[in-house]
Amino acid sequence: MIELWRANMPACCALPVGPPPILLLDGEAQSASAARKFVREFVAYHVPGASDEHLDAAVLVACELVTNSIRYGTEPGDSLRVVLDADDSRTRIEVHDPVRRQPRPRPESEERDRGRGLIILNYLCPGAWGVDEIPMGKSVWAEVKGP
Image 1 (cartoon, rainbow, N blue to C red):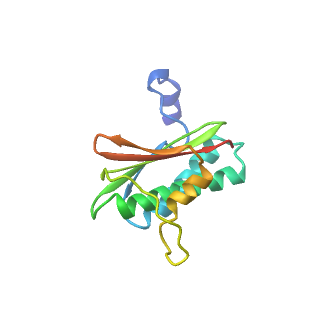
Image 2: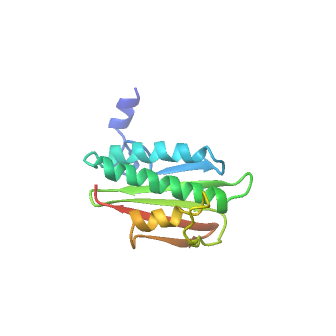
Image 3: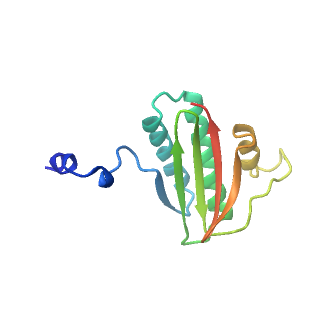
């Protein structure tokens, strides 16, 4: 019945196929795991020729962005949003949170177990990441080149 309904739906109203490009998450530590799974499924579906290296890099970037958003961009009860776009040339990952405070690099340290997220972004997405203000907070984005 649903297949018949979809077949008769006008092109302007057709439901998207495959994983959706947006995931809403609670500002909790376990959300990073959900983001990794979401990115892996989205990229694998929308860019079937993506290499394992590209897929792993996109997953790691998303995890870093989500983890930073949870740590520095949310308060208890807040949520964040992951927005993806992928094609044959790059995968774009955006994480939206309600805090306008901009991420800032910290000096490298072997003594701290935190503070490496922006170093990882600089390595995996050289010159292809940034921060934009959005109406209710900020969007931190990064693009992983090539599949």
